[in-house]
Length: 117
Image (cartoon, rainbow, N blue to C red):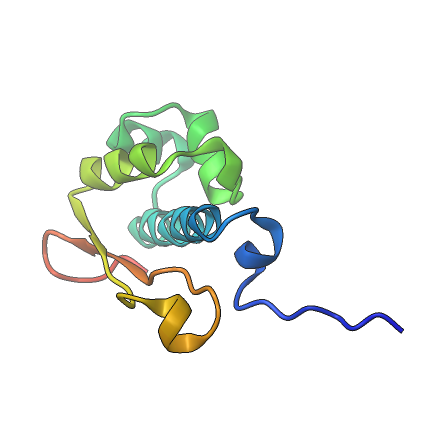
């Protein structure tokens, strides 16, 4: 019987490197934060696109969680267009301290200090 592998996150399971896993995790989390912010504003996808400086199909990809269609740069630009700051944080050496790969925790803060998600 084959022993199953254990991963810290789904991103660790599908990525080839710890860096790729961290990037995927950061993009997914930032997308969730942006989508939650848009939802709380009560905007349609067209309205959100206008506020974000992107097209409605782009917002559709974002709210549907299509991570592969967004770079971190694009997501930071969208957050900035919404008046939010992206704050990155994490464990300085998670591989050695925790014994496994661990994506850095991310948070987005709006100009009023409230977290969008």
